[in-house]
Image 1 (cartoon, rainbow, N blue to C red):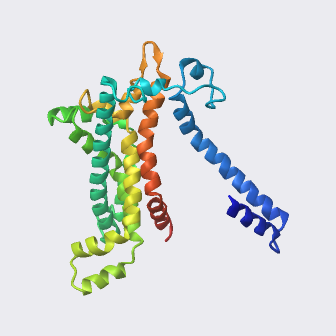
Image 2 (cartoon, rainbow, N blue to C red; image 1 turned 60 degrees about the vertical axis):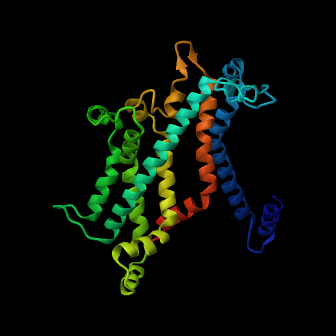
Length: 307
């Protein structure tokens, strides 16, 4: 904070910097702070709701220790409160099972989509293709256009297909559908990443005796690593938050956390505290991944934006 204040004061007294420039910066920072508040408020509300009782939720109390006294009710209902964490809990066992299913399906689908998307993106960026009137740009647009299709349109075909292949209520089936779901966006991102890598580097590797696969694995992939990490995280977020296919194609064995969160609604109303605790537990892994890999995300997105 002291460094920021000194920098701001230095700019204020710098020759040629008038009051208009200072007011512009104040306005920009004010808008950014306001936008950050809007983005972070749902997370704050969800986290604090997990510590509320029913009257606190219904009366819209927001600030802990000022508007309400925090309680472990939401976490206690999951067997995750300090007084229940060491006791036997069927709800906690079910939560851990759903958490494991989400981890396996999301990571498996994201990694498989990244492997296929990297190969497809490299091919579209380096080699000319033609299928009838379709060229590389048309093929790339065809892939990304698949995201326009509403998932509900695929409900009946997937149910019939998965029943025939005995993939209903199985993690392999969920991994495959997650791969298909995020593959178009991964191909699009990786194609742009490979297109930004100078082809002269690969030509020099060919001269040194490397094959196409050797050049791809030893030269191109390391240079495209930030973009691959950004694509992986985006795919991971989409898979982690996916609800429709997880609810449609799974049952007691392979259901994920989003399905468990939605199940907190019943005939007696919504268990807001339990839903908030589950949502908080579902958000935390993605927050940790985002914080740890932030520099790769920024570098990957910036590389794709610079031509």
